[in-house]
Image (cartoon, rainbow, N blue to C red):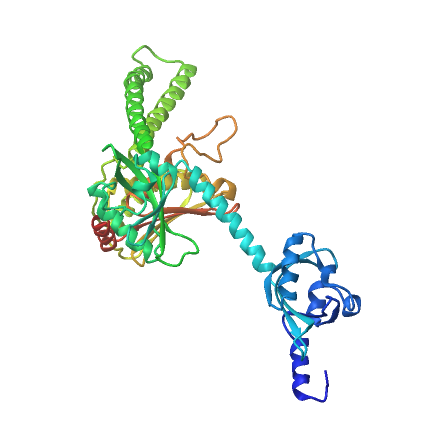
Length: 493
């Protein structure tokens, strides 16, 4: 190019600074020019490639026919566009989106070719990963044991998996293209809830799984847990995925569990009452004065009978709370009064253990709708644990926080390691139990019961603890107005 021509100078600068590879060859394909981007991407300097054929970039992953079609197109005077897998100097492959054009002289003869290539390796890699992901997702949907349905935001069925056909008895062709609600597979009592969930999911809200009743083609009713979510990558409100989990087996297991717990507890309680009465008679000297050794044996037996009775009662209570069959007598509760009553009951424990007992209460607390017996039981469980592990001090704190009331029970004991905290609210989980069984023996159900009590009050409970820094249990329950609002929302749904 003539460097004295401003336009040619500008064109050269544009080519030199181009973000794409530029290659110029003669009619036989020998390289006459490459720009700096070529060197940056391929690793070849211009000196290494000038006079050579671009086939040195061949990766071996494209067919001979592909290149033949390329040259036939160019030699016939047409522009060629396509994607090619090339190879860098170090052997690493890269994808290039190429645009190759023939250049003609004044007589119209082709004497040169210009190729502009864009490195699209990142895009091709992402597309490949997406294809793999979509294939895996398709396989998961196809082989899932749970029904999976894809709907539009109006409830029209776009696709179903084989499990949906099996569970409901309808064929794919009968379901797809139909209206999920209007075709009659959702029972009438569940229609309002499903409609609400579809609308709120479509608007982008994250929803929790909910229970609904479906009707099979034969007319049988099946209970499912349904989980709705927006399909990723399809835009807000465009497609909704519903995953169903058949709850019939769970319902049957819950019924069997209830019957088992009731039967076992009854069978245990009757003989336990008799044994307890007999031990009390022995302790009272009905069968004669006991020796010191006999007295110790009777006392140990009595303690273990009481522990077994507590365990049976705890198992029953937890089972009822978990299944939500336990009657919750919610009243407008003066939480400050309940706290004070519970705290007063632990004053003697504090004195006997020589521990400081601090209370931090405001002059008044908002009222809550709660079952006083359950709240007292939760507080008593937490305080019992605190006094068991405290070194010198136990603190109870209450405070109003936005639309909730938070109660905290804190001790200055050894603290709980993070790995032990994970299962702390699980059934029968106990920590700090002395080796050999000495000391206090709880049921391992106290914190599990506390968790259920918090949840039936639409609240939550959690722990904050670190080794050497003591432990704090916090639980929150909604104040009256918030609980009523939540309940009304539930009824509307």
